[in-house]
Image (cartoon, rainbow, N blue to C red):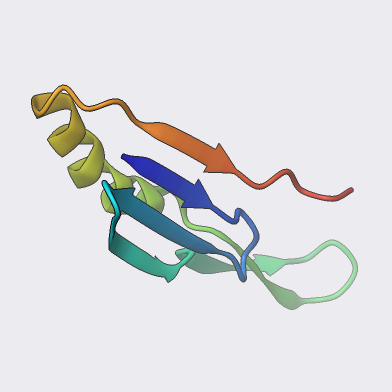
Length: 77
């Protein structure tokens, strides 16, 4: 199983099982208020929802004793 993650708030998650793409969707995000200088809304990755997306696939791989390779895009800073 291969998991590819573009980790930005506009990124995507793809999961391949063998040669079949079994999941491809936008990165789950959540809006937060930012009060640092002026009131504004910021998008951040919703880690709770991300865990909900990944857990069924990881559980399935564990049951089937399948190796999982997760590739995460390195952010440019």
